[in-house]
Length: 204
Image: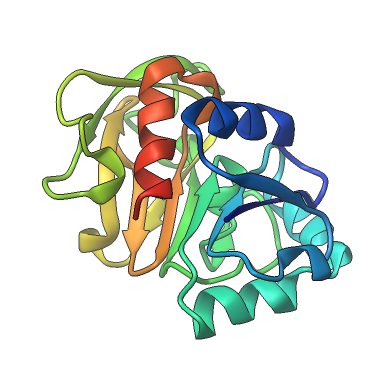
C-alpha cells in the first residue's frame, strides 16, 4: 500500500486520483498511526525548504518516516520540495534537511550560466534518464515533465543522479540512492509521462 504523506504541502488528492486511475492502492497519511503498514511512501511538497521541514516536524510523522525509510528500507519518492528536503542543506533556508541522500540544494542564481534566466524554472522540459534507472522504465526516449522551482539538488555522489534536464546548464532532476528516490518535477501534472513514472515507483 502506498502512503502519501500529508504534512500540509502538496496536492495529495491529485496523487490519489492518479493512483486510482492506475489501479494502485494509495491512501493519505496525516499521522504516525496512519503510516502503519506502508510498503511505499510518497513525500510531496511545494514552497520553501524551511517551511516544509517545519511542517514535517510539527506533523509528528518524522520519527516514524525516519524508521521506515532508514531502518526498514521502505521505498520513498520525494517530489518537488519533497525531493529537496531529502538533502542535508539548502541555500534557500537555514534548517537541516532529512539527509537521506547526500547532497545540498542550490539556487540557480549561484550558477553563472543560469543567473540571468527567469525564475522560477517553470513549464515543460525534456528529461534525460540515466541508463537503468527503474523510475524511468518506458521513459527512456522523449520524456517530458512539468517543472516549477528556483532551486536544484546537487548530489555528492554522481551515481545518485537518476535523470538530468537543462536550464542554463544540465542538472540532476531525479535522484535514486538505495530505497530513496526523488524528482524535482511534478509527475501529477505531467500527463502520461507522470503516470508512467508513478506506475514504475509502485512496481519497484
